[in-house]
Image (cartoon, rainbow, N blue to C red):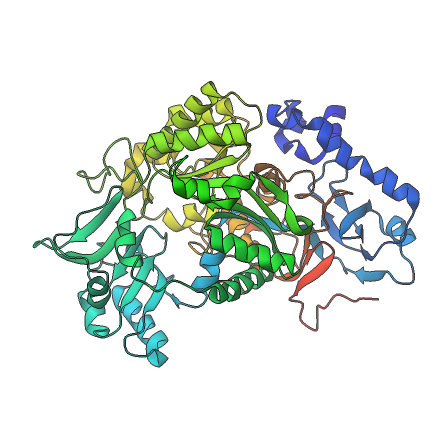
Length: 594
């Protein structure tokens, strides 16, 4: 047990009991101990703290002091965790004192796969999530469009035909009748397909003679005309006609998305693919001190390595950048795509879909493209994170990483596969063998479980959403939502991870319950594991002296309440760098401040 104490929060719970060590963690043991060693030095000075919270139930995600009652903050960093009496020693006349009255505190939630600008845009568009029929989709658009001018574009997101009685893709006819004069584009919940009405298709100049692009599919009528749905790379045939958001639009959307994230207890996100202008907007806001989030930004696919587009990309030319603007932006990862999504049958499978035997999915990038970027990243110090959902898509990425690492061997590259949703059993051990991190989303499982087996059949489903199978190989599984694909609320993620049930607690016992996470693992998957997956573990992910004072105050103890009570938990406040960025406490529950 002595070795486990020395490894502190980076030892997995099961490893403490068995004496096993995660090799990736051990490689960085010296760095971690150095961070934790700041504690006695800081306390030795006995300097006054800016903020002291006492009388709480505080989960630090640090095995040195896993549960404490008090925390002290100075200069935006944790300076002490421990008892109330000790913390009060650090209080002076100017110290803000907060009595938690038994509330629960955890490190700030980090969503390891999200789309920040996508959330901001979704907040300004028609919300179609949860619609149970095509008729309801049209009704929601009509309600939204009451003040829309004739000819103005109408955009929405969130429909999912798998929730409807008729599970086939919709056609544009009914939407076109409802909106003959306005172009309407409605993105599917997963972002990998869209529905366009006749006016939008006309403005995009798409017709029967328009060919399907590589990695894309136009759903057509019997005459060859576009039926209304465009899948994966075919989406661009329509979206190229939509007026681009202005820089001012992007600023407004970013601020709205940050506020929404803070409301749900998020202090950090891993932003899965943004373009150069969007990242420059993030920098502008962060430089002005108006960015209440820690964003690990992934560059959207810059084009072929060595191409003019890649050479012009300023972030590729600058190289990896970390902890910019007092730790609010990291720009050191590249986001690529291997395939599409399972719900729209674009995920690339090794064998055809069980419910569409003529279709095996789509590859939206070539294997050579992924391998080339992996090789360049290994030479330049970037991380590569590749979207892969189907078992063929995942194998292609693992093969590309393997080939790149053979040519340019590198320890601690922390390459990632985003989603890793359907895996061949033979590929599950390869993540640990190659040092690849599976970045997964628990609520994808609870959203997909009613129809996923129909897509892939009873055998392949055993390798789908297989968190426990992966954890047992020794890898970590950073957790996220993929918002706005799923809801922002990280408590939905926590609940799904430990129950494999939807918010109504269906099905009883959980869907393939042998793949559940423990509560300790679920909390790690939303705190310290994303930090590790983003090379941030020395400053984020646990309430350890020396790290940023990012934490969330909850009104329920999610580590101890019954499963059915987890989603009744409210975020009372969210703190970043010791600064309260969200106050959700009602008058009856407001935390007393001195």
